[in-house]
Image (cartoon, rainbow, N blue to C red; front, side, top):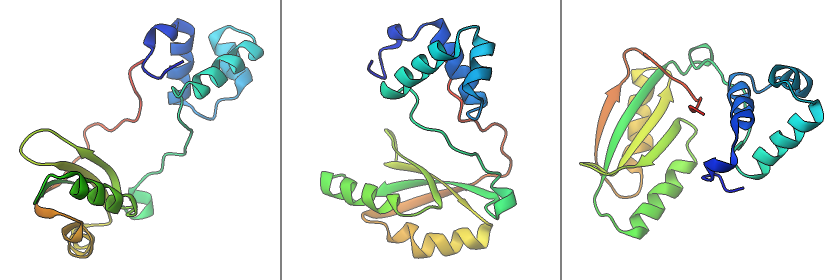
Length: 158
């Protein structure tokens, strides 16, 4: 099964995916009871979804405020050159910084959109000077500090 072969994911698979997105720690027995299949059948389906790359992992979601990372910042990054070497160096450099939660190459008026988490504005200022502005190829950045999280989800609509 290829990850983009949605025709191979039936209604039961979708239900399994919905439940696992809501509770990745649910036991196979409870999942089977909820779905209405045998535990063996549900386990086989879940393993097939994992092998096919549909389920890519399980993790604990943490409350960032409770661990001292209460500020979310989005940063637009414009590179000085858009060559494969600059892109490769930039991509490699962002991988090693845990504060950077997401980094996306985008179409439009800038090259990358970064989402990061820090303790506060002072921590962001320090990170920007020490890391962000030193990333390979960075010509210009625009920062957007989040004032209120209206919606945040990792769940995909299946």
